[in-house]
Image (tube, rainbow, N blue to C red; front, side, top):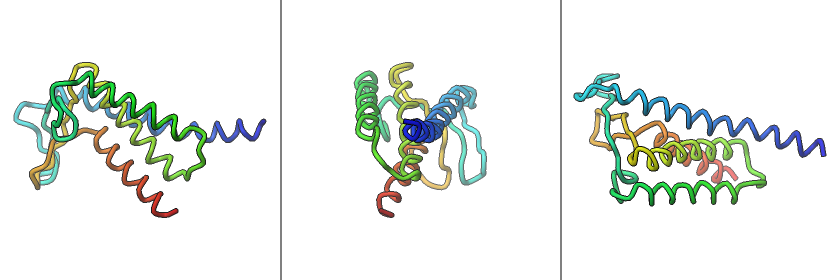
Amino acid sequence: MREGKREGNGNRKYWLIAVAVFAADRITKILARGIPAEGQVLIPGVVGLRYAENRGIAFSMLSGAPWALGLISLAIIIGAFLLTRGKEMSGLRRIGLMMMLGGAAGNMVDRFYPGYVTDMIEVLFMNFAIFNVADMCLCIGCGIVIVSLLKE
């Protein structure tokens, strides 16, 4: 019985990743409200900040149904949790999944209230969508999971 308890406690540290991603996303979205309308350059020619409201999913697709998108996000989060609960997997894969979970939860909260996802990170050296911390963590987490699967 003690063995199982230790294993469960060891997995709790991975949940901190999801919590940290969620918190960083929430904080940056609150701070984004103060970005000047013309935007703000952080690294000239590389990256800047510009406030944007995304009322759909990636690249504003499926705009106009924030509650439906929020419910879909919630269903995916619950499904992923149920599918991975109790499964043996590498630490690397757990890290990726927790990054994805934290990012998905951050954007899901926005879809329910205020009804759009706040974006603020702008790539200046190419024409690309404005995105947020949750989006970054979703993509990085997905990459980590793919690498972990390829390693196996």
